[in-house]
Length: 77
Image 1 (cartoon, rainbow, N blue to C red):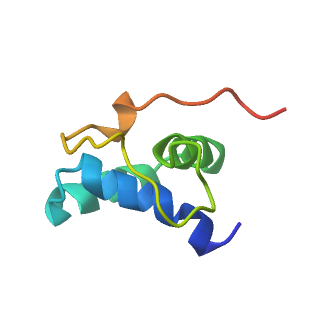
Image 2: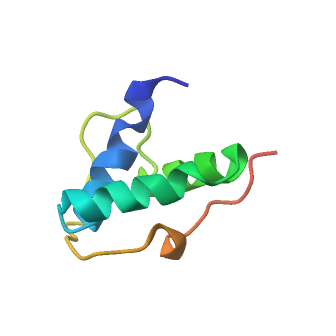
């Protein structure tokens, strides 16, 4: 994967963090501690299913949401 495919996930994480950089960095730090397969699943969930797209949103939501509260998609087999 490339950096660009994860831009929507990080953009959505920033919005879900209330556009607060401190909260965003804390969430990114938490994300970085996950094992790679789980981290990949969380990034996919954060992307809203639009990985690789340039523009995505979190359904217009600007509330704070913990990364652990986000749904995880089933494992790819």
